[in-house]
Length: 618
Image (cartoon, rainbow, N blue to C red; front, side, top):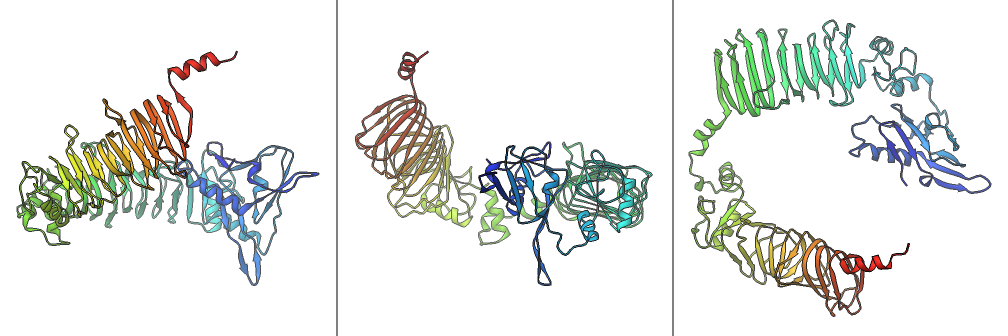
């Protein structure tokens, strides 16, 4: 058993087995190392199930002050409670000061804490527990302004009290849980509102709330601002009176610009779905400059009648200038398509890349001339191959420069193929015909594929280096000397097989690579004949096998043979003399092994089923 957290109820369950036995009689006493305990909680918090929920605890490590050791402090926060496995036993809490004893759900277990006050003051404890700000949870907090209300373990449930607590302690930060609506208070001293996440925290700002100079972080936010605001790491809905900056946020709706200061949008993105929906920057007639940098996605600019400066640097996407734009100096840079339905005073797209500008500046150049290593030209040439060199020994052409090796003009010989792969730094070969890899050829880390309907033949001669190759929709034969990955392949008479096979067909005699591992998933034999698998000293795990299989040469006692059949038959040859051979699934077994341990309790067929019925006792 292990420590678990019920995230819905915020209950931490501690099994007795996770504590250490101190004495068994006359009373069973156990101990719990609190530092170990909080490390288990941190592991649970960063699991996928726990990442979206608030932290379970706060931790201050042990420190030495003036030669005095102050113990570490562990505080269970955010309304989490602890339930020890019920029973007649006691547990000593060791290794830290904590509030675990205060957060225990009462049952028969006696929980003993040994907290030491140390060299601390009450004021320091209070100030530290707030964590630099007031925690607000409208749904499950509580009213009041006296400590510990407003801390993480006892949030405030209304902004009026939270504001009093913040001002009394000199805080400029609110930690917002769940949803919050700012109605009519004055926050113009420049508070920072921090959410739990953009999914868990949704803040709506009403018109009468004065949020001048406030910053909003890590939340979904919408409503009316008041100027000099910062939105950071947020999902931004419809906002009125945008003045200040928006940083690293996702934009969903209309942003109504205001004020006279420069508005900066940095590292933001389009969060709308569909080509007809896009974030809108409504200039409200104009009167301030707009600078957008490192933007990703689509956007629209509308309602501009003054000569403001509009600068947009976009990583990729679409810029739409609405007909309501009748003035303004626009400068666009980056990668984007532009639809200009307005009449701005100027529109500078000289630093913008789009289909037309790239075609004029780059694509009219001869790709074959770009072969210098580490150059932009070579990168563009490589892209022209779409990541693959095509090979056809019958209909292809010789050569080592573009367009030889493309889909329309495959290369026809191995020597030129190797040059093209190196020149353009490509590791993917598509075969339109058979290819024989001759002795001494190095194809390490390459991907070989062909069309699934004809499975071109790839032959390995002895002495070919093919470390960690990937084969897809291809027929392979010959001598392999390293593990590889095979998907939807036909393997015939292969020697030195190792690695991973997925949905492959095997034929003839297949010999495994000595000492290596082979994993097969949903593989089969050819319909008309069994495949012979010479195991040797290899380890094999096969799941979903279909068809006829003869297994020979299983002679290494340290390597297991595991086969799970969907249906078929398996014959164990007399040369299977050592090791464990597990056979599972639906099929028939002819066991001629001589010394191997064959386990068949997981097999089923009509004979086994019938025998089980007759042997069944009432």
